[in-house]
Image (cartoon, rainbow, N blue to C red; front, side):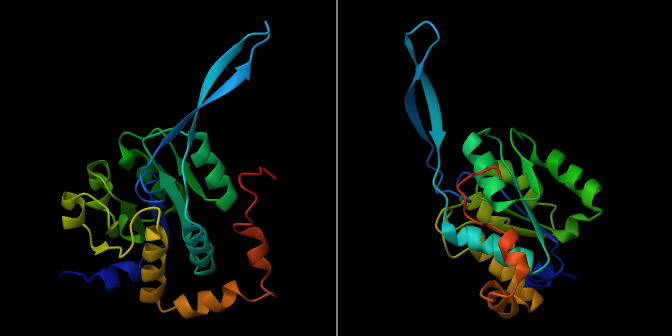
Length: 205
Protein backbone atom coordinates (compact mmCIF):
# COMPACT_ATOMS: atom_id res chain seq x y z
CA UNK A 1 0.00 0.00 0.00
CA UNK A 2 1.31 3.44 -0.93
CA UNK A 3 1.19 5.86 2.00
CA UNK A 4 0.14 9.46 1.53
CA UNK A 5 2.31 12.35 2.69
CA UNK A 6 -0.09 12.89 5.59
CA UNK A 7 0.11 9.24 6.65
CA UNK A 8 3.89 9.41 6.56
CA UNK A 9 4.02 12.68 8.49
CA UNK A 10 1.82 11.34 11.30
CA UNK A 11 4.51 8.81 12.29
CA UNK A 12 7.39 11.29 12.59
CA UNK A 13 9.28 11.64 15.88
CA UNK A 14 12.51 13.27 14.64
CA UNK A 15 12.95 15.99 12.00
CA UNK A 16 16.39 16.42 10.41
CA UNK A 17 17.49 19.28 8.17
CA UNK A 18 20.24 20.04 5.75
CA UNK A 19 21.53 23.60 6.30
CA UNK A 20 22.67 25.42 3.15
CA UNK A 21 19.68 25.92 0.87
CA UNK A 22 17.27 24.60 3.51
CA UNK A 23 17.69 26.63 6.70
CA UNK A 24 19.48 29.30 4.65
CA UNK A 25 19.01 30.55 1.09
CA UNK A 26 22.21 28.77 0.12
CA UNK A 27 24.39 31.88 0.07
CA UNK A 28 27.72 31.50 1.87
CA UNK A 29 29.38 34.79 2.80
CA UNK A 30 33.14 34.76 3.44
CA UNK A 31 34.49 37.86 5.19
CA UNK A 32 38.15 38.76 5.73
CA UNK A 33 38.77 39.77 9.35
CA UNK A 34 42.08 41.34 10.46
CA UNK A 35 43.70 39.54 13.39
CA UNK A 36 46.55 41.00 15.50
CA UNK A 37 49.51 38.62 15.76
CA UNK A 38 51.86 38.29 18.77
CA UNK A 39 54.75 39.85 16.81
CA UNK A 40 52.73 43.00 16.17
CA UNK A 41 51.82 42.21 12.59
CA UNK A 42 48.32 41.74 11.25
CA UNK A 43 47.04 38.59 9.57
CA UNK A 44 43.74 37.96 7.84
CA UNK A 45 41.25 35.37 9.04
CA UNK A 46 38.36 34.32 6.82
CA UNK A 47 35.02 34.10 8.64
CA UNK A 48 31.93 32.41 7.21
CA UNK A 49 28.48 33.94 7.70
CA UNK A 50 24.99 32.68 6.90
CA UNK A 51 21.50 34.10 7.30
CA UNK A 52 18.78 32.19 9.15
CA UNK A 53 15.03 32.76 9.16
CA UNK A 54 13.26 33.52 12.44
CA UNK A 55 10.17 31.63 11.23
CA UNK A 56 12.23 28.45 11.16
CA UNK A 57 13.42 29.12 14.70
CA UNK A 58 9.83 29.52 15.85
CA UNK A 59 9.06 26.30 14.00
CA UNK A 60 11.61 24.49 16.15
CA UNK A 61 9.68 25.69 19.20
CA UNK A 62 6.44 24.40 17.72
CA UNK A 63 7.99 21.02 16.94
CA UNK A 64 9.22 20.67 20.51
CA UNK A 65 5.80 21.56 21.85
CA UNK A 66 4.52 18.80 19.57
CA UNK A 67 6.84 16.30 21.24
CA UNK A 68 9.46 15.99 18.50
CA UNK A 69 13.26 16.22 18.45
CA UNK A 70 15.24 18.01 15.76
CA UNK A 71 18.69 18.11 14.22
CA UNK A 72 20.89 19.12 11.35
CA UNK A 73 23.15 17.10 9.08
CA UNK A 74 25.43 19.11 6.80
CA UNK A 75 28.51 18.51 4.69
CA UNK A 76 30.12 21.83 5.55
CA UNK A 77 31.74 22.66 8.89
CA UNK A 78 30.93 26.14 10.11
CA UNK A 79 30.92 27.88 13.48
CA UNK A 80 27.81 29.80 12.47
CA UNK A 81 25.96 26.48 12.19
CA UNK A 82 27.20 25.44 15.63
CA UNK A 83 26.06 28.77 17.07
CA UNK A 84 22.59 28.53 15.54
CA UNK A 85 22.23 24.93 16.70
CA UNK A 86 23.16 25.94 20.26
CA UNK A 87 20.76 28.87 20.11
CA UNK A 88 17.93 26.53 19.14
CA UNK A 89 19.17 23.76 21.45
CA UNK A 90 18.93 21.19 18.66
CA UNK A 91 19.30 17.62 19.88
CA UNK A 92 21.38 16.43 16.91
CA UNK A 93 24.18 18.35 15.19
CA UNK A 94 26.34 16.60 12.59
CA UNK A 95 28.74 18.68 10.49
CA UNK A 96 31.30 17.45 7.97
CA UNK A 97 28.98 14.68 6.78
CA UNK A 98 29.71 13.70 3.18
CA UNK A 99 27.54 10.59 3.61
CA UNK A 100 24.55 11.64 5.66
CA UNK A 101 23.10 8.18 6.29
CA UNK A 102 26.02 7.54 8.64
CA UNK A 103 24.71 10.28 10.94
CA UNK A 104 21.12 9.06 10.54
CA UNK A 105 22.11 5.56 11.65
CA UNK A 106 23.79 6.99 14.76
CA UNK A 107 20.65 8.93 15.61
CA UNK A 108 18.47 5.87 15.10
CA UNK A 109 20.65 3.80 17.42
CA UNK A 110 20.79 6.48 20.11
CA UNK A 111 17.06 7.24 20.04
CA UNK A 112 15.65 3.81 19.31
CA UNK A 113 13.64 5.00 16.32
CA UNK A 114 13.08 3.54 12.88
CA UNK A 115 13.52 5.20 9.49
CA UNK A 116 9.73 5.49 9.25
CA UNK A 117 9.83 7.83 12.26
CA UNK A 118 12.38 10.21 10.74
CA UNK A 119 11.67 13.17 8.45
CA UNK A 120 14.44 14.76 6.41
CA UNK A 121 14.39 18.14 4.67
CA UNK A 122 16.85 18.60 1.79
CA UNK A 123 17.50 20.50 -1.41
CA UNK A 124 20.33 18.83 -3.33
CA UNK A 125 21.44 15.41 -4.57
CA UNK A 126 23.64 14.81 -1.51
CA UNK A 127 20.39 14.58 0.45
CA UNK A 128 18.86 11.84 -1.71
CA UNK A 129 20.33 8.80 0.11
CA UNK A 130 18.46 9.86 3.27
CA UNK A 131 15.35 11.06 1.47
CA UNK A 132 14.98 7.77 -0.39
CA UNK A 133 14.71 5.72 2.80
CA UNK A 134 13.33 8.00 5.53
CA UNK A 135 9.69 8.01 6.53
CA UNK A 136 8.91 11.50 5.26
CA UNK A 137 11.14 13.17 2.65
CA UNK A 138 10.71 16.91 2.19
CA UNK A 139 12.21 19.06 -0.57
CA UNK A 140 12.36 22.84 -0.36
CA UNK A 141 10.80 25.00 -3.06
CA UNK A 142 14.30 25.85 -4.33
CA UNK A 143 15.48 22.23 -4.40
CA UNK A 144 16.97 20.68 -7.51
CA UNK A 145 14.36 19.12 -9.80
CA UNK A 146 15.61 15.58 -9.19
CA UNK A 147 15.27 16.10 -5.44
CA UNK A 148 11.72 17.39 -5.72
CA UNK A 149 10.88 14.37 -7.87
CA UNK A 150 11.73 11.99 -5.02
CA UNK A 151 10.16 13.98 -2.18
CA UNK A 152 6.87 13.16 -0.46
CA UNK A 153 6.25 16.87 0.06
CA UNK A 154 7.64 20.10 -1.44
CA UNK A 155 7.49 23.20 0.74
CA UNK A 156 5.73 26.32 -0.58
CA UNK A 157 8.62 28.49 0.62
CA UNK A 158 12.28 28.44 -0.36
CA UNK A 159 15.18 27.57 1.90
CA UNK A 160 16.00 30.45 4.21
CA UNK A 161 12.50 31.84 3.69
CA UNK A 162 10.55 29.56 6.01
CA UNK A 163 10.88 26.15 4.34
CA UNK A 164 11.84 24.54 7.64
CA UNK A 165 8.72 25.95 9.27
CA UNK A 166 6.62 24.64 6.36
CA UNK A 167 7.88 21.12 6.95
CA UNK A 168 7.32 21.30 10.69
CA UNK A 169 3.80 22.68 10.41
CA UNK A 170 2.85 20.08 7.80
CA UNK A 171 3.88 17.35 10.23
CA UNK A 172 2.10 18.94 13.18
CA UNK A 173 -1.05 19.41 11.09
CA UNK A 174 -0.91 15.76 10.04
CA UNK A 175 -0.69 14.78 13.70
CA UNK A 176 -3.66 17.02 14.49
CA UNK A 177 -1.78 19.16 17.02
CA UNK A 178 -0.78 22.29 15.08
CA UNK A 179 -3.42 24.57 16.60
CA UNK A 180 -2.65 23.19 20.04
CA UNK A 181 1.06 23.95 19.56
CA UNK A 182 0.27 27.48 18.36
CA UNK A 183 -1.74 28.12 21.51
CA UNK A 184 0.94 26.60 23.74
CA UNK A 185 3.53 28.86 22.11
CA UNK A 186 1.74 32.00 23.32
CA UNK A 187 0.78 30.69 26.75
CA UNK A 188 2.73 32.72 29.30
CA UNK A 189 2.21 29.99 31.90
CA UNK A 190 4.01 27.42 29.75
CA UNK A 191 7.36 26.90 31.50
CA UNK A 192 8.72 24.94 28.55
CA UNK A 193 8.98 28.10 26.44
CA UNK A 194 11.75 29.53 28.61
CA UNK A 195 13.95 26.61 27.59
CA UNK A 196 13.43 26.84 23.82
CA UNK A 197 14.97 29.32 21.34
CA UNK A 198 15.59 32.11 23.83
CA UNK A 199 17.34 34.12 21.13
CA UNK A 200 20.77 34.77 22.61
CA UNK A 201 22.42 34.75 19.23
CA UNK A 202 24.73 31.86 19.97
CA UNK A 203 25.34 32.60 23.66
CA UNK A 204 26.62 29.40 25.23
CA UNK A 205 24.75 29.95 28.50
